[in-house]
Length: 142
Image 1 (tube, rainbow, N blue to C red):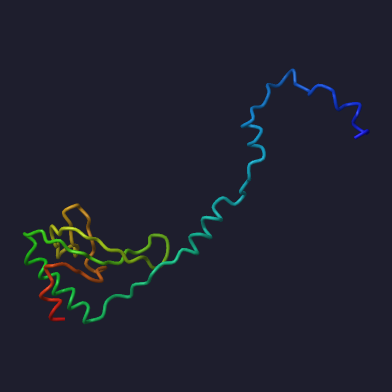
Image 2 (image 1 turned 180 degrees about the horizontal axis):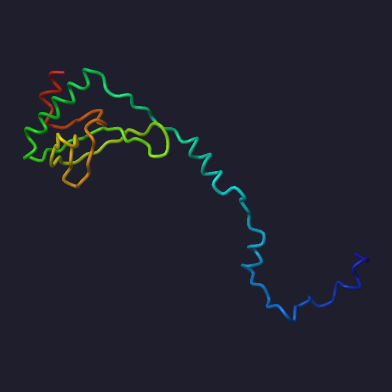
């Protein structure tokens, strides 16, 4: 401590030319710097898992077809159904399975979609299962 006795009690230097830096700006000098900002996102994207969907077997296709026919026959009642379907990933191979519960409004055979009363559209080719009270007699036979 003896080495600094000559300067320890001097007043802190204030620039006469430059304004005093705010504490926020002073702290920003020491903020972490990420030179590869997108690298972390790329690593997370690569690590994100996706499911694969290779399609349904012949038996499952027949069951889905029978349920779709029942749905079309009763569409005027706006039946409440649960559809499990595959959503392809936009960024990489694979995707995710998800479910939608709602009232069916229309089955468009030309576009091959089910349209719900809330506007949700599901591609028939991506459907894995359809459930609902409407299909109870069919499910007992299976």
